[in-house]
Image (cartoon, rainbow over all chains, first blue to last red; front, top):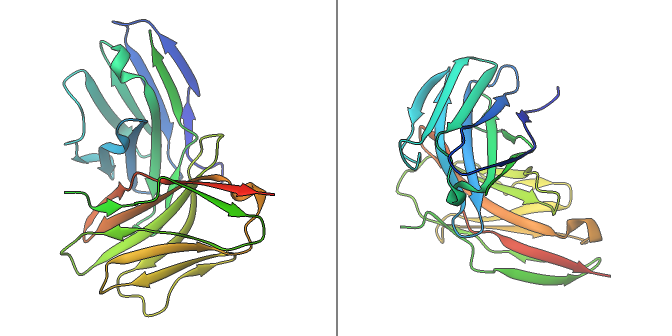
Length: 113
Length: 114
């Protein structure tokens, strides 16, 4: 299994631009999570899906952030417009039914200048 | 309120010695799971070990073991025979009941000295 695949690995964008982060979960995992990691706030959950349905989006910072999961093998996290304070590492993770194993992708390092 | 507390920001350990990383948690749900992850300088999050709240025995995975003290709500990670490759940030995390999200602690940085 290729694991959880995220793209791009690095993204540098200018303030005000739209940014789209992509994630392919492990086949058979029916939970998908988006986390953000910063030095100040650590690892924080943004949103998670079960069977493609958003379950908890209480961690999404504001309306500039949106996430979709159109099918079981693909999810996107979009920031529009981006701001310098959005600079962070964004992780996607997926989990098998039962919640005993969570696998993280390699992360996307986003820099907004 | 913090669900996961890791009080040690950084630790040094001599190669081949054991090190214990502290983790305390806060939940009122009788069903929960505790996880430890390793994040090396390359940035990926690597799953190490899992302990369920109803598990009777402490979890072990190779050189990693979890010292689970339910009454104290603590789930300390023990790394035995430390290796230079163990130098990394270590995170404790918890899942509660039917809520599948993981709540993470602030992490502990471990540096193994030769």
